[in-house]
Length: 339
Ligand SMILES: Cc1ncc(COP(=O)(O)O)c(C=O)c1O
Image 1 (tube, helix red, strand yellow):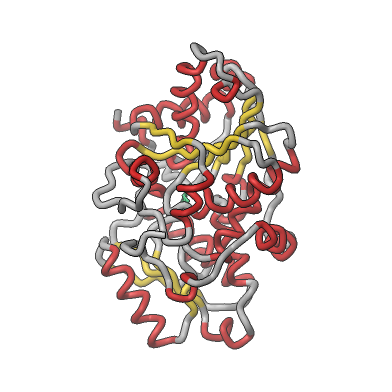
Image 2 (cartoon, protein in one colour):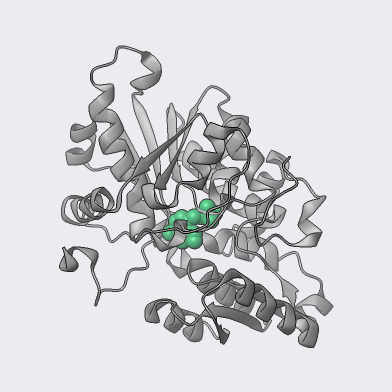
């Protein structure tokens, strides 16, 4: 594993590992706290890509995103005294709301460090779930130092957004459920930000169906996983430029090896294609999704129009599962209104 990572990793996660047994244990642990989200299909989309597409709808998860699974799996493993000290994280997005809600369920305080430019809707969600927001400069350094200060002052336990075994195991329960619901999948597609969702997806999907094709999707303006995989070494995301706000971050120390070793292919989508896919999904599936999870949809729209020309069975799956990772979108600032 590369030693030159510059992610926001935590020290306690570094030496630990995470396996499929942890995903199964997480599924048991969080069962009574999470929704078993539905799998939807949309004839217009299956027709457009030329195969059966199944959407695992984590936009219907508590807090509106899959992030709740990792957050609640982490909080549920804290001791009484750790819960009494509370939890802390830094996040501009869905992990913030997810952790605030998970902490509230366990009677713990949640200190959430949010960059001053975080969206109002995401700040409002954190407040609604009882999270205590500390605003900071919109830089990784500022986020990390504020979180460290709060940790030092309160003894709160740091729950990072993706690079932690408990978070990864929780996120893996999405693919575990999806493969129980649709065992015939031969391809599974998920977005990649820090890589927690994809790492958990790899654990569950490879264990349950070793031959399944695992495909990641990234914005063209934040393609660090794509670049890293092509180069065979970790390349950080330095200047992300995309509307998909959940996918701007670099991979982490635990998540990069999953991307490197288990993901078969990473597809890219530019923001225009992402907005168009998001709008198509709203119109045709009648389901609200946020830009970060329209990226996989945009990517497969593009990929499959190319694949139609190919006879390779690998390029032409029959049954594709796409993880719809979240639905938290600011209705006052819909991206197509700015086009
Ligand atoms: C809706 C949504 N999808 C995907 C991701 C990416 O998840 P990960 O950082 O685990 O790769 C995020 C991260 O915040 C998200 O909010």
